[in-house]
Image 1 (cartoon, rainbow, N blue to C red):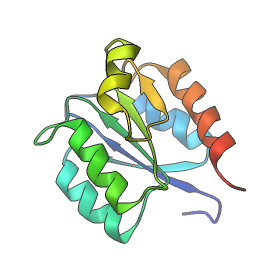
Image 2 (tube, helix red, strand yellow):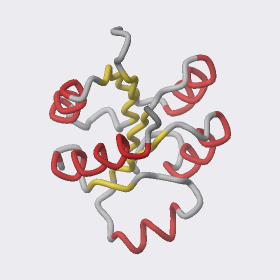
Image 3 (tube, rainbow, N blue to C red):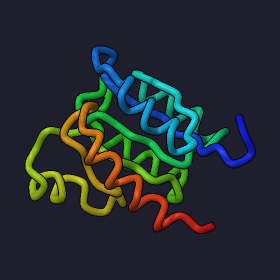
Amino acid sequence: MGQNALKTVLVVDSRTNTSKFTDLLAKHNFTTEISNNPRETLEASKKNTPDLVIVEKGIPEMKATTFLADLLKISWTTSTILIADEEEEALHEETEGLGILGSVKSADDLQGLERLLEVFFRLRPA
């Protein structure tokens, strides 16, 4: 991993095709790990905290909001994005207090991801 590379983890349902996201993230100097096991991801985050976690609402074994709350307890500095095809108002109510950057509708929503990466880089200290 390069000196300036940022680490991101995609926590998704195993059926989700993430190749478009990983390609875009690589262009922004992220190294990406794919996981469909939220509990293992939380354990790994205790040892090696990611800069960004993108989590799909339909992950197996655990509600995405529970995962985000548990991740926040491990590292409040990790930025998060939620993949959820729901209305923004409902998502805001459900995720309030979890500090997410925002949400994208699907793993094909490259415009939405690009917009949230801009927010990530504005908030990230140099």
